[in-house]
Every structure is written in structure tokens, then in C-alpha cells.
Amino acid sequence: MQININTDKTIERHNGLDEHVETVVKAAVARFGEQITRIEVHLSDDNSQKSVDGGNRCMLEARVTNYQPIAVSEHGATLHQAISGAADKLKRAIDSALGRLHDKQLHKTPTIVDEEEV
Image 1 (tube, rainbow, N blue to C red):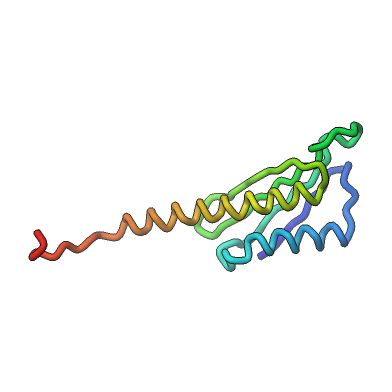
Image 2: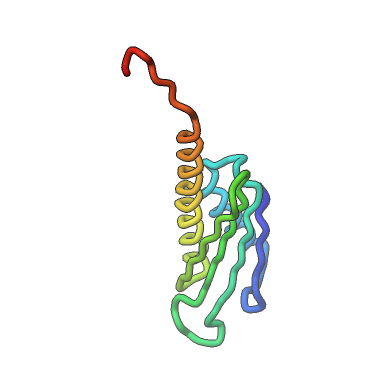
């Protein structure tokens, strides 16, 4: 799984931030294994000029094999809170989407009825 990290001009990008993002995101989606090909991470501070809580934003977009992209967003008082919250949301969104995909595949399978039961 490839993780691409993007920041706006208000976020100072450094190795520690990259490592933190990768660790949190990989831990959240590890159980989906090879089904995820790439995750785009977008970090920003919407309130960089103000001292207002909740201005830090993390948007995650996962590319899942044989499925449309799944995107989530989270705001937090700190960048770490926004990253963790978005990772949790992404895990739930992928689980839900893959569950629906699995259910559709089950319903497409023709059911065989035993003539004795009819």
C-alpha cells in the first residue's frame, strides 16, 4: 500500500510528521491488506491565522481494488487528533463499503433449491 502525504502551506512537513501519519493510517487499515492500493493524505490548518480549536484538518482518500475511492475528513484541535480521527473514520468507511460489496456478491450467486423442499 502506497501512502502519499500532501500538506498545504500552513503545515510544516517533516520526517516525524510523515512517520506518524504512515503509522496511524497503516495501523487503522492493516486488516484490509492488499485490497487497498493507495491512500492520499491531505493535511491543512484552516485557522492558521486564528487561535481557534478544530482548525486542523486531515482528509484521507483510499483507493480500494474493484471499488470507487473512499474519502473521509476530520477536524481536530491538533493535527494528531485530526489524523487519528480521520484514520478511524476511514477504517469504518472501508469496512462498510467492502461489506456492502461482499453482500452484493452473495446476492448475485444463484441459490439452488432442493426439489424435495419445494
